[in-house]
Every structure is written in C-alpha cells, then in structure tokens.
Length: 385
Image (cartoon, rainbow, N blue to C red; front, side, top):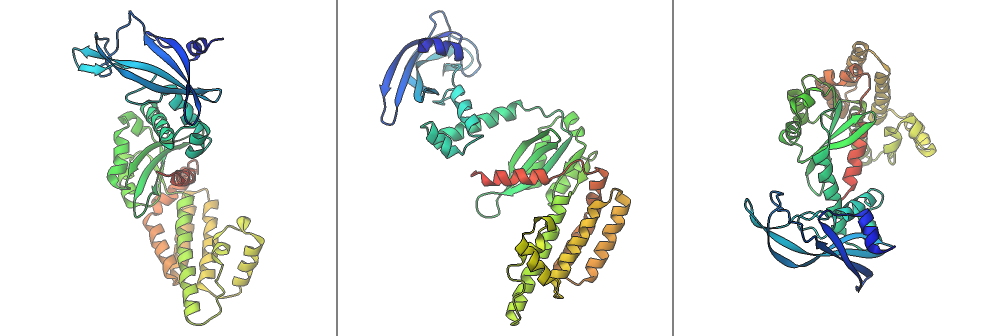
C-alpha cells in the first residue's frame, strides 16, 4: 500500500491532492516530505471572509508537520496561493490542514494535545522529537477549541476558587462546574477581583445564569459580592472544606505563637514537630503522630485546647437540620470566645459573619462541595503557567 493511499484514507482534503513523496535526511531524524497540490479546477478560499476568490500569485513553498509515521516525521509541502478577494483584498488562501500561520497541521496539534493529557509537555516533546513550544501551542489550540464549543446552557452547580501563580500576590480566578458526572473548568481570569468573576457571568445567557441552583466558594469578599449580585436565586454554600481550612489555619497560628513563647521563656519545647499531629484527622495520623498527640494532651496548652475545640467542631457536620446545626454553631462560638485564644476568636468572628452561608451546607444537603474545586485548583497550580 502506497503512502498516498494511506493519507487519502486518514487525511483526505477536498480540492487538494497528494503528489510525490520523498525522503529527507535531517540532522536529528529521518523525514518524509509529501507534496500537496491544488486541483486545477479548484478556486482558493479567502482566509479572511471564507469566500472562493480568483488567484493572485503564489508564495514560496511551506512545510506543515503532520503526525509521525513509524517514528519518522511527515511534512506536507505546499506553495500557498494568494487570492484577490473583493472584500478583503489580496490575502493568503485558507487551507484545510492548518490554521493561520501555524507550521503544524491541525491533526498533529490534536495528536500532541492528547498525549499531553497523559505525559508532561517536556516528555511529549522529547518522545516525538518536537519542541516544548509546539506542545504548548497544541494544548492552547485544544483549550481554545473547547472554550469555543463548550455548552454553558445546562449548569446546575458551580464552584469558585483562586490559585496563586508566579511570584508575589498574583492570582487567577477559576470557575468549575461541580455536578455529579460533570466536573470541568469553565473560566480562568487573571486576578481575584469582582471584575474577574463578573466577566464569567457575562459569558452566560440569562437563561443559563438563572438555571444555576448551587454555588460553592471560599470567604473572599469580592467573590461573595459578585455571587450575591449575579446568583440571587442560587444556594450559596461555604462548604466543609473551606471552613475547616480556616479553622486549621487559626489552630496552626496558635501553635506557632505558643511554640515561640515556650522557646523564648526557656521552657521545654514540647510543641516541636507537633504541627501535623494537631491538624490531622485521627484516621490520617501516623503511629508516631498519635503518640506525640497523647503526650501533648497531658499539658494545659492553648494549642491543645484549640485542637480539642477543633475536634469538637467536627460534630457540626453530623447534623441534618439547619436549625439544630445553627444552635450548635452558636454554642461552639460562645465557648471558643471564652477560651481567650486570640487566633481562634478571630475564626469565631469570621464564622459568625458568614453564619447563613455556612448553614447553606445543610440546605443544599451536602450535594455540592468545593473540595473537588480545591483539588483541581491544586493540580492547576502545579502546572507552569
């Protein structure tokens, strides 16, 4: 079976035919060049307006890289025509195997993008003897295609989060769809301002925006403002993940401050290497951390009292009624305020400020969670932007 027969089966083009194929010895690898010719009766298509127009002249030959065959690079060689379009003037024709000025065929870009789902971009570039930039451009092409063709008319629940990228206080705003059976990234915008989130809702139709029933977010004020403005009909949930994360941050602040005081005052440094035994759930502690915690429980330390308060709060999630959960929350906040542990008191003030949104967890019956959003955000953060 000839190479032209294979190409005509896997990559046929209307108004174009394959010509001669030849070997090319390159520095790093062997390659095959396949000539592409326009049919004699075919008129070129203007790349601006898409209309068929009369020819003007031809440009020098260009090479377009195709999917490798048996480990050998394959290039289409074609001299682009320029057309004399009545609307756009003299422009370069549109060809079906590539877009714009890209030297990669569309098929090859999709090929690299699919491999980039399974391997790092460097590994994909090394495996197929191409450059990191080509892999990046292929992934970018796939992402832009997905954004242009995504269906935003049937969204039931969304999650809003941010990730820090590069150095300094630079953030990206991320919006995910977080329904069962449909978890995907819908929006990325620079910064974590009201405008960066509001622009997402501008991309939705009025019907799509009103169809959103649940939304999860953290306690970042600009996000809360936009969600209250745009999704008045939705149940806004500050879910378990973000609330426990806030409490853990307060507990860790207590531990750091108390450890520094013990060291400064010359006492035994009992809190050394105690971070994770205080923060982890019982089922996640190692044997060594469990022993360390049992030793700490013998001391009357603020860190220990804060840990016990955090463990007591876990009972909050066992309720099913928003009313009874609200009573427990109020009682817990009162007890914690009386503990006179300043970082924990700050947490109480935050929880009281967002009391209604926290109780929405029970009104939503736990059907949506931003934990999956946070996990995907951490994956996004691991990717070099």
